[in-house]
Image (cartoon, rainbow, N blue to C red):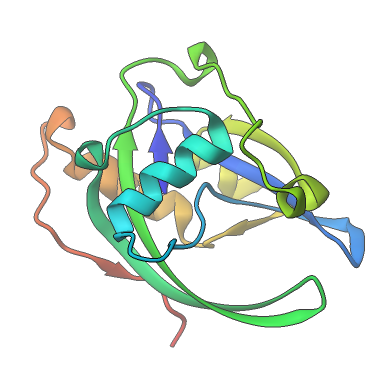
Length: 162
């Protein structure tokens, strides 16, 4: 989920590896589908659970990107299919009342914080950011959003490594 504030900053989650707490990374808000749930509904639900922010599925633009990610998590090899939507909040992120009460026990065990980031600042971090293409993707999406004078074409960017 590309959750953007009125200034174009993106809300990201910082987590650490349970097997190596010194390894941390930033990633987008999101999660899995519940049985019978559509992708838009899941994205809106995950935003509420992970941030306390209430958005409607109809507020989402996209999907704007897709990818298949393969990684290790809690000593397991995971293959995850991800769909990214975008949503621009009407206010500054600092004005949002972020609430982590909806985090699951497993999220509480590895998630460290939520923070608003200028997408360009992500290029200079010493910490991994997922997906790696995030700064470029955010710039493309922001430029295409109707409120920015753009026109969303419905194009979905494939971020899956070749």
